[in-house]
Length: 186
Image (cartoon, rainbow, N blue to C red; front, side):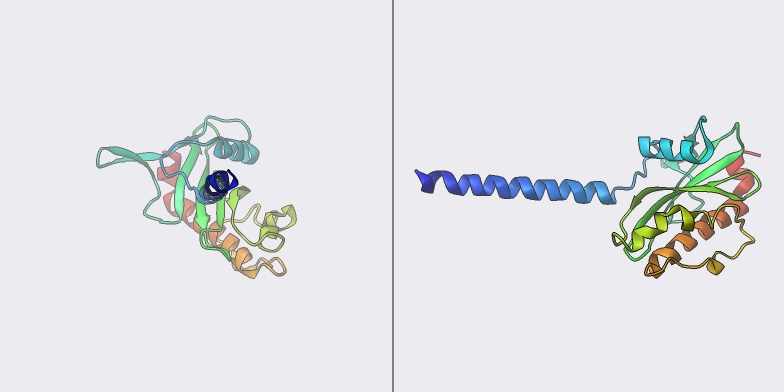
């Protein structure tokens, strides 16, 4: 009897464990490119600018609506609220891990960083994840495209993650500076 029950039971347990691991990996690496605001994105926008009527800028391409990225592969979407004349740029950037930083960077009408929210982080726990600390993130608040993000001190033991953050913020500021009128609909 034991010989008949154990093999299927062991295989069932193995399948359940592998399925759980696949689900975790999918959720950790998923980036929404459909132009739909996820709950995490809505909460991130609210954390940066407060309540608003946020929507993703889209354009028609081959009969489908896709997020506007101005040809930048790192940009996933640009979120706007016409009432506050500001935008939030969703970006995925390499840190220590490929595409390890998935962020929302809020930029106000003057072109200054208002805030940064993480949608996900795939950096080394305890090291690279230190870039989420408010002490480090506050160094970006108020920066414009004319400021040098490279001058910001890296987080100790998180050099690649710090550089990824600085690159992400620079990309967002540059994109906003070059496309402000199109983003804000002016």
